[in-house]
Length: 433
Image 1 (tube, one colour):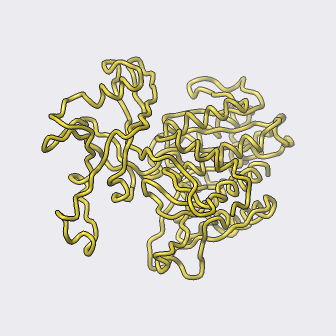
Image 2 (cartoon, rainbow, N blue to C red):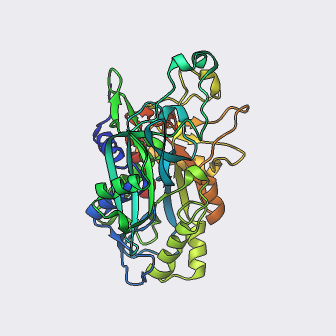
Image 3 (tube, rainbow, N blue to C red):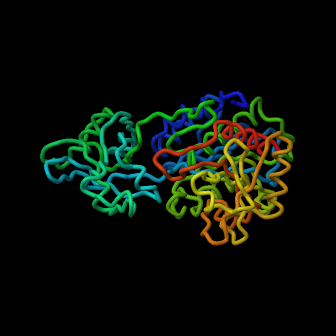
């Protein structure tokens, strides 16, 4: 049965449904920040006149938000919650219109490491960003059954249930979206019409497919949630809500309090090496400008601020799978609805060390929430996050956490219905340190 008020999770499911792409996630996060009194700053503008209060910047599908308390010291440091806006999916190629055997199809490219079979036989929509003549951009979201990647019938693949499904990434994942000969420019014409713009004005795009089945509660007692893009919009949503909650009323900060920061960055699923990824300069540039421009600090103040900074890298973790328990480390058995997991790997696939563990334990104690540990088996490679990248790039104390889930990187993932609230509760306390 539910342990906590589900208002947070209800809101999360709404956020997930409205955020089929990283660009939509950033727009929706910004709308929540706007409603809470945060103001958007332009990277090309000066920030010297930006006084105390909440601010954010957007670059592509990344958003950095922060709140400067009254009388903030330039050397006080930051409390950074890092998350990522992107999820593995199928993305539209530059020349998308194709077809075989009387079907109209759309050429797609794999983004990140999706579970390929999870995209088969699903009703798929289309969403993303259209870049217009003159440099403006608009978002499009076709949230209805538009495409489908049909699986080969068992009659034509007799051994599939014995030997397993084998998919050719180039040939077997091209969705169908109509009948008849394909027409060059048809997909762009369709997307532009859906967005209410002229196709001739669209000079570039970032379009991707998504499962149109809505996020939902699941189980006899509704104690689980099934949804797309939980990795990692659960953390983005928690970070937005926590930043707003922690800074409501101006924030209960003294002049020496650290500045709370949400870093919702892009391209984690492909290695983070981009201008909007954790391996790029975006976060460091924003933190530097907060110290130097907003707070009129010196280079020494910035060095002191980084030395006092702590980063909580928040990304999804694995619960023990009931059908594959042998795939998990036998002494560490994370479960759904048992609180966020602290992620540890001594080879620095995760950034957590003893200091980070102590900080996280203290945060959970003050938030009054449970926590658990995730460690990979010695015989199995460990995934990674933006945590080690952020720690190395900025030289800041970092630890990795995440709520547990099953079916990570599937078109639809499975998690506990209480865990998102627990993560947001911990993040609120972390921001308020």
